[in-house]
Image (cartoon, rainbow, N blue to C red):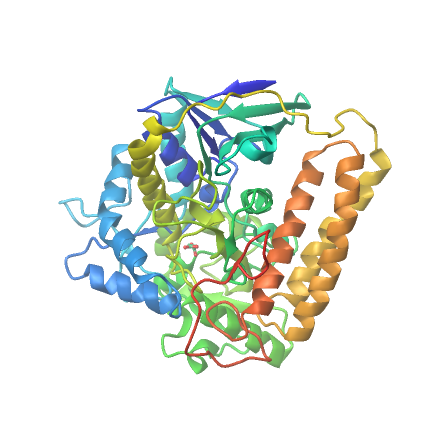
Length: 538
Ligand code: SIN
């Protein structure tokens, strides 16, 4: 089956939804989710969104904090633009119906601002402790009622479609003209043709055994863009969130940094506040520092976890400010008001991704990338807390402005069915065991060898293993029945390999990339550690 649209958007978190709402004023939009519309990392975001709002705060402070967290690798002009535009992006959200928490005592209705690691001021707007879900729901209801937006749920993207693939006789620059999908429920292939395609496919936390991310964070957009010829950059910068719940059944449950922003301390089993040994900001230092402090504490003491203690704030405050986290922990047997909570770091946010310019344009004309799948230069070597939702909104706006400028010069692609050479009906039940085994192997390998603390030897070992796995998957992919797990597995392996290759090339320690063989930070840091499928020298 093939379809045509003006704007194809893959991914339905805040980047995809906000872009859809803007583009729908100028044409037909097809918005594709690989699961349901609300299954994504945006819905799981607890903390909030950063913007200078308070009169005692200034843009220069937010710029400084972002650059400082990014450890010298942010692009300063990108940081300045995003920070200075942030209040406008907050107004976009309010216009779409997002109601941020207000200070209860304030009859003027000022927004309540919380604090997180690396921020010198209170500047995080939030909706209790489920900000992402509140944003997702508000934007989703707008999208659903918009007659210009067609929604395809349960469609997993397979490949980007390009001029050169479809029309080999074509000369001139290659161009993205849409993407192919597997309609999971009906087990059919669907090609969607469009002059502009937006990847808003999110991150790749699932490359690691322990992650705060949703099930589908398998780096699909990054792997597809790479296969289509785009450069991928700074993949070594996987950010580990310091505090995920340490619990067998809920190991991916995030305990928001906002708890530390509101006074929670990180302590060891003896009750000692160890984080001040590493940075004077203690538990509110940037995430890379706090995650490494926890890792070091656990390795020194042999403990399986550390503890987050917010008891001193009292039950009323905790229940009112963090109702979602409080109830979830209670359901697992932990009362935050009565006991310190066992926590461990977990893979949380990919700072690198598909290389884009300041408008979210990738190397492939017609293809844009926004949000966690993109490397825009905002985050450098370590993202500042609550700058992620902001980046999604900012770059979907910049991409929207760029496309308005150029859209009349780009013709609609012809759009003809593509022979994917894939099997839809062949049976291969026995082979699913192999898929799940390879999934586990990749995730354990990444956790053990490409984690918070790395070494050249561990990285080399991981690279050899992942390369072998990629060969096994390639063999499987084209010979057996197409299944979403196989599609994700192939992407996961590609993204894992790109992460390791970037990590091996970054011969220093900076931000979230820490290598014991190169422990000190070099002064001549390259902000762009990029890999292209055509040349490993970027
Ligand atoms: C959190 O609530 O701790 C996560 C916020 C973020 O990742 O920026």
